[in-house]
Length: 89
Image (cartoon, rainbow, N blue to C red; front, side, top):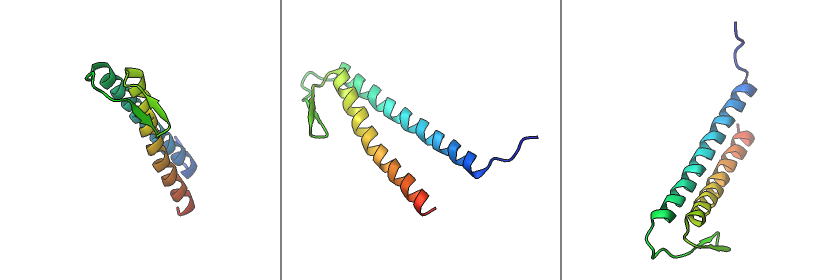
């Protein structure tokens, strides 16, 4: 017979699922940026990554831009959720 999952085990599984979903979403953003850069119109303007680094609208530049902006924004939001859930659980 298998033992019932403890709270710590369930929490680790839940954290792993959230991490995998986060990585998949960031990878999709990178793929979308790459595709936009590859087939996008020639009139695309350079983009500024967090207002600090200007990236040319190449497939690699737009992939980096998409992954960094979505990963940063979503990472901050998930970090706040983790903080609040541990503090006020």
